[in-house]
Image (cartoon, rainbow, N blue to C red; front, side, top):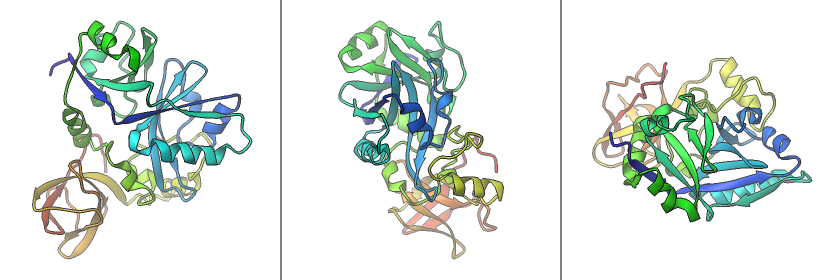
Length: 296
């Protein structure tokens, strides 16, 4: 593993929320507790539909007098519109800073080489005024540095980092069972809790009300979490969005993201489901991958 590698995540977007009501505004919307977000801690969170269905997921970082939202760039405009719909009379400003900042991902070993680092998920510190975060979802996603674009090349030179292909980073994320590409295809297709948000530190069941909280809590309390979003390994053939996944003519799932890093919603408690089996989907033979952190 080359700790000098850095992945410049140009496909991540940056929103900035500030204003007198920003804490209350965010707290009433997201699945996690905004009070966890401090100068030394960042968190993973999601914005759900009122029915508890997935809409957006992002990392929240405390920055100056407000909060940075690190999300998939393809979803920035839609997320901005959604947040503005909820603003009403709140004293809140939501800005798109995607053209001013970039997210850089580094290996865990490089993150640990910083004198101020701590191997605690979400732990945050500043390096030359840039926030450095241990990814709050899983430590094997490494660290994230939020860099002002004007300082990007100088920062990489000082840190002795060399840009590497993004395919490497997204392959790591895919193998960990964490989708970061084409997440717009998941919108309203599954409940947020089915995205493994509890295991990935995206949900706080003690924080109180937020959009979609009622159905999320009901699924948890009644032990009705029967489906999971999981990576798909394509063995042969091809798949497309919406293809049914079959086991002995029994539907055990559906393809939601069919691109290179494929994911499907899988009935993990179905009697015909087994991680060791090969399944049919469209013209393809596929396997469902089990992330090593997932306990069923």
